[in-house]
Image (spheres, rainbow, N blue to C red):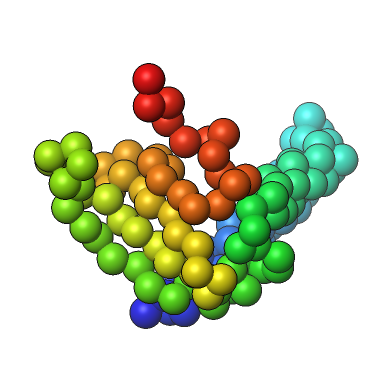
Length: 123
């Protein structure tokens, strides 16, 4: 199921890139001169940087598909500590885990040292 979702996301990304290139070509053919191809290149570079900036944690080290294959289990649990709500716990091959709020998607717990500064304050 996870592989299927990743394949769908990859297809969507390809459609967006191809659609953007097609739109740029159509706009240039139509004589719309305020589109600069270097600015499109800058946007592609920024998107690539954002995609690769998630490599600071200890479970990363490759493409999105590599990261997804590091996932051992993923389950939704009742937040007994808070007394209400649910969280999603993702366990990785290296034995580490991350916990995400199911409503906001925010990281609320992690066993990785590199994630500790991203967690909400307990004060």
